[in-house]
Image (tube, rainbow, N blue to C red; front, side):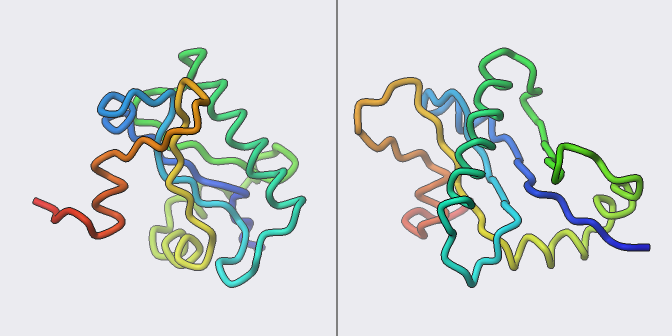
Length: 128
């Protein structure tokens, strides 16, 4: 059986959204190898993913604790459950892919909003 990995996985962080007033926040893992520079088509794909996730969150169609999986061609493979339930496989995949700390603000004023999770990821605050 061929293992088919997701096109992306998004883990929503509702606590960060509430803290900083974001429309959407979380970790987005995209099936682009970490060792490559994203091409224009990769950038367009990520933009489209972010637009769909933002629309779902804005419309109230995404649970606060959502983990969203996207598949190539929008079709979930028959063996998706076996892939997604294999924590070691998913971790190896995520470790080798581009990970984006996604933050979508309700306004586009050019100001960067830093939340406690981004500060922690940057090593600027200690974890408790």
